[in-house]
Each structure stands twice: as C-alpha cells, then as structure tokens.
Length: 210
Image 1 (cartoon, rainbow, N blue to C red):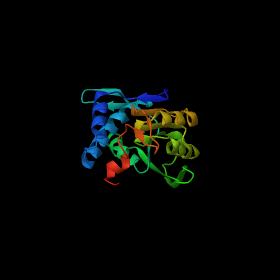
Image 2 (cartoon, rainbow, N blue to C red):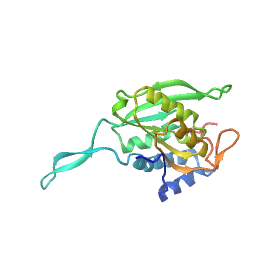
Image 3 (cartoon, rainbow, N blue to C red):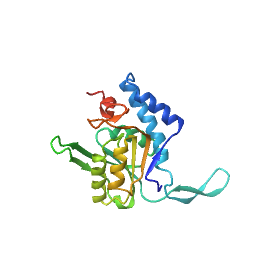
Image 4 (cartoon, helix red, strand yellow):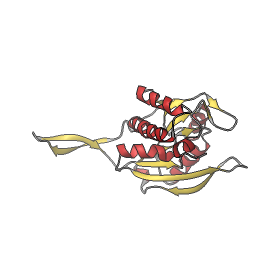
C-alpha cells in the first residue's frame, strides 16, 4: 500500500454509510452498521499483507499453501469512537494484538492531551492499524501517530469512516508515510470542527450519549 489516500467506493460500503448518516438511524442500527462497514474497510486496509507458504495436508494430498507472514498485526483504537471500528475488525482478524490511545482536546489550547496509552510490545515488527471513525481536523490522529512512532511503530496505516480535506492534508503534512483508508471524503469542516455533511458525533451516535 503506497497511496497516501485510498477511498473505498465499494457499493456495500457506500450504501451502509448512507444509512449511518441518516438522522433517524437508531443507536442499535448505527452500531451494527459500523461493525459491518468496519469489516469491509478492514478488507481494504489489510490488502498486501506479507505472505509466506506452509506445507499442509488436504484430504487429497499435501500442498504448499499461502498463510500470513510475520508477527500478528496490531490494531490501535483512538478512544473512544475507535472502539466501534475495532470490534468489527477483530471479528475478521481475531488474532490481532490490540492497543488504545486516549486523547482529549484542551479547550484553551485546542491541542490534544494524552490521558491513556497502552499498546502491544514489539510494534517495530508489526503492521499497526490505527482506527478512528472521523478524520476531522487531524490533530488527534497526528498526535496518536506521533505516540505510536515513539513506541517503535514503523509500518502504520490509518483507517477511518469519514475524512475531511483539512484532516487529510494535516495527516499528509505530519505523516506522509502513513496511508489513509476511508469510506468517504466529505466537503469541509464547520466552525466547530465537525465534518460536513458528516454524520454528527460518531461516539455519541454509537454509544447513545449526548
């Protein structure tokens, strides 16, 4: 994966995203759609994983069969909304190691502040997939990638549901080596930093909070 931005236009992804955007979609349905769409996006973000072969016995004869190579990949959720993507991807890749990055925005400086960081060991030898449904200003995503690189990660991909042009540009400026996979590139950010047309606050809609 070399492109900085991959826009997943698969019909099922786009259809499910439309349902998620609708104001009248319930919390339960939103959560289920996010789980389903995360698996479809995971299919794309894990494209080109390193492979090797292993000799196995089929009912008819032995064969050299393809299997994943290297250490188990690491999924890192940017709290709290990242957990919605994490659940679906883990169904697809149950052996993945899991980490969490907790950030909040300081209301005076508007800069991300770390409050939690727990990630798997040996990140330098793993593909690391950071997940957060919304790439808005890009500030928290950039901060999370900063922390992952400090922890040793060298091969990082970023998976999101929606991205704003401002967030994409910010990520490219700070981490041009981190490919972004998204289901949509929306129009812009409003004055409050929300993606427009977007789908509102992903965490609130996922967890039923306001």
